[in-house]
Length: 159
Image (cartoon, rainbow, N blue to C red; front, side, top):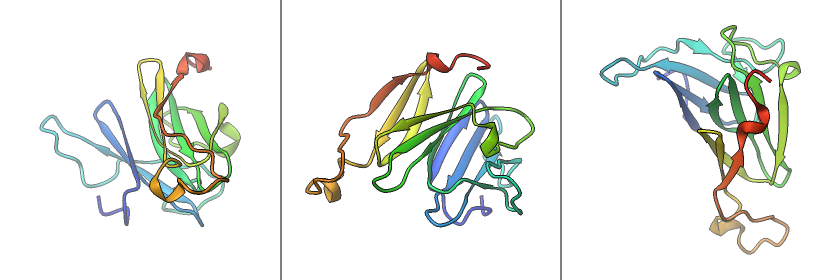
């Protein structure tokens, strides 16, 4: 997996691993790697995902992406950095490999400092950094010191 200089988040779907990198100043990247029956990872990306219009290779995702997960026929990204509200970006997971800004199905606003997300069943589990030691004495930071469980059935199938 030498296509990414560093891995910031990871997600799984069926026999594939999705690895992305976070960037605060410019777009990040997300690559898909196949996993064979022995659990070995294909070292070359078999799918690159794009979330921005008119971008050059390598195919980027929006800046400030912290996590990725899948629910039914959707792909969800957590977008967050700093004190601004975070967002869960929901797209239809299609085979055309392009997730453009205009194609977002739904945006869900969350407290700041959201990080990794994970879908299981009809629940989305959301992890926040805001209760970390470095934020404990900052009064202007809304602290979320629990893993939140959100109901994903609201987005439905094929919404």
